[in-house]
Figure 1 (cartoon, rainbow, N blue to C red):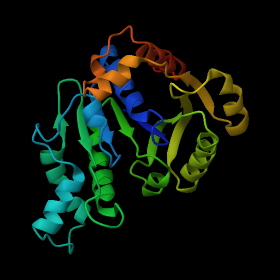
Figure 2: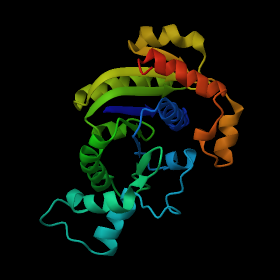
Figure 3: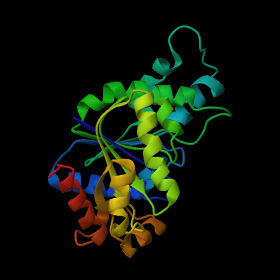
Amino acid sequence: MRLIVSMGRGGSGKTSFVALLSKRFIELGKTPILLVDADPDQNLAEVVGIDLEKEGKKTISEIVTETFLEEKGTLVGVPPSERVEGKIWEEGLYEGKQFDLIAIGPKWVEGCYCLPNAALKNALERLVKNYENVIVDSPAGLEHLNRRITSNVDDIFDIIDPSQKSFEHIVRAVKIIEEVRVSFKNFYVVGGYRFPESLKPSIEKRTNAEFLGKIAYDKNVEEFIMSRKSLLELPSSSPAYCSINEIMKKAGYI
């Protein structure tokens, strides 16, 4: 089982990266795949063509809300995260022919995401054993790293845009990952479609991170997202998809 985490600043293209990476894994037959939407904005399902509500599935935050607020479940005794684990498997896990998907969902109450995060982490510890590839779409920023939803990762992909903050994001991300003791094998940097290849030397010099290339611009990606059409349906000739194939080769996936 390979556990992959996609991270980056908001708007960098990390969710599109996860969708295109999934498409390539599917076409290579590297399944089963579990997609984990750990971003409260919750749009990974949409870009891979899934409407969780129509499928009768709930987010983890919705399950937590129903259990401990609406149904007034007690927080005493069995840890709350374990109390909802069965419901997550039954009510929250979308199971498809090509991949399964689970989403944390929007914030359930004021304050932190402690309980939903703990529930997701506990569920993943058991779920991941059933998949060849697990891909986590992280929320924007770096705060989520302290939650340690995943503590043993194979590959981390930081999707960046052409900005000073993106360079700082890489350095800070590696530092936090090491401080909170998230184990990982590889930390890669991938440029979003707006990132110029000319900045590659700067990345490797200033961050010591390996740059695998950039996601090529493809107007179809924008059109698919705007029309809520699955990126898994992009043609194989798509420049964006072809660039993902090259990135996967450099990462040793092919």
